[in-house]
Image 1 (cartoon, rainbow, N blue to C red):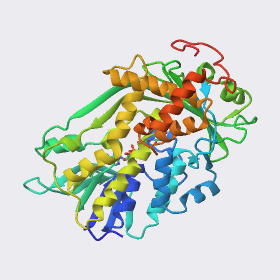
Image 2: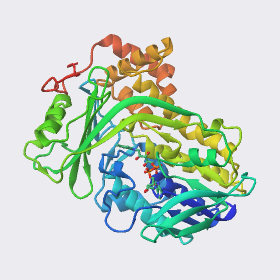
Image 3: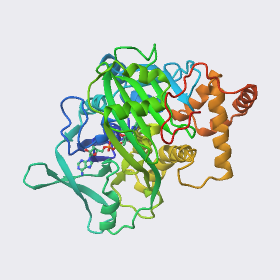
Image 4: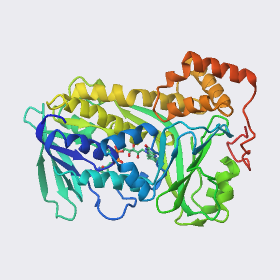
Length: 464
Ligand SMILES: Cc1cc2nc3c(=O)[nH]c(=O)nc-3n(C[C@H](O)[C@H](O)[C@H](O)COP(=O)(O)OP(=O)(O)OC[C@H]3O[C@@H](n4cnc5c(N)ncnc54)[C@H](O)[C@@H]3O)c2cc1C
């Protein structure tokens, strides 16, 4: 249990990052107030303030572990309420370069649910904490600071439909978890601080998602099918069992090669990517909604940790700091890792020093994930960015890992542990594994027996 760091912490934004932060702050502040523009009660359905909630949201094994640690028993609650659970390597069916990875037991849980369902369960746990209150239907207007602007002392909000009347929420600590559209960068400039350095990585990603009730079973004991986009096949598709006895199906493409949102075009796009597992099941499936698109042009990182001055009493987290290419499903896990780092700082029993904390958040939770994302993005030939000899070697080696992983379950498992953020990318270079990969690569090509080729060829897609 952390010692008291202050009277009141205010969390701006009740998305995943805000909820995780509220949980750890509740141990260290007398009161925690979570503010959001949306009405958060009611059914676990997508909401206006988090429109990405309509798209598939995979929870990586590391993020799942942290959520269970922060909210003991929540996995069982969610499974009882309709989420699916399986083994990361044993019940998720992974395809890379159009070929299926060898399945085995990793001992790591993979929970599949819709994002509103997961968020709703986490929110219910946070709401149940005795010292946490939610202020819903509030627009956040601006920060309030001391006259010398060295410390943030609160935030000005307004109630929606309240005729513009402003409310001041005083706070010892303000956490900005308002997502990618966060205004912290602009507020800092208004307070006389320099413009934060922004890093943008173009990816031109387009998602389309639709929900179905299936009549035939493509899973055969698995919980999800994930056809990863790769240099050879730069489109992806995912089908996963989610709450409400539904299957969520998402297709995505990069650099402007986006799935259409009309049902026929959506299916044709999936057929172009899919080993027949997904598309066959969709033939007689009952659609439950229309396909919904989402565009994600660039990954964005705001390097607050590189600033020389930063006001006390303010800490941005989550997508407000780092918004990652969503096709690797890392965002919620980064938010969870950040909560772990924040908790460590709170355990000191004093209000977190912002720059010290921002640097730790970056080092512990963001840097390696951001680098992993960039490295993987650069494996797609059209993606802009410098490819050093080291980048090319690592792409070549990961290609071998994936190829050998179609035959050797231990190699597949090692690869999946990296993308699930359980192990650093360097773990793939451990001598014993390296040797196994090289031996496996010499032994022959990928095992295609368990996989079927994409059925049609469309623009931008080469069959492997
Ligand atoms: C298409 C897509 C798919 C994704 N898929 C995955 C995935 O598979 N796995 C994964 O881990 N991550 C995924 N992500 C990323 C994930 O959604 C986020 O990284 C994660 O939820 C953390 O977001 P956040 O809480 O920081 O911000 P958000 O989820 O954006 O929440 C911000 C909150 O702040 C509120 N807010 C914003 N501005 C104001 C204001 N002015 N006043 C009041 N309230 C305000 C909003 O209502 C919202 O509730 C995906 C993202 C996208 C775009």
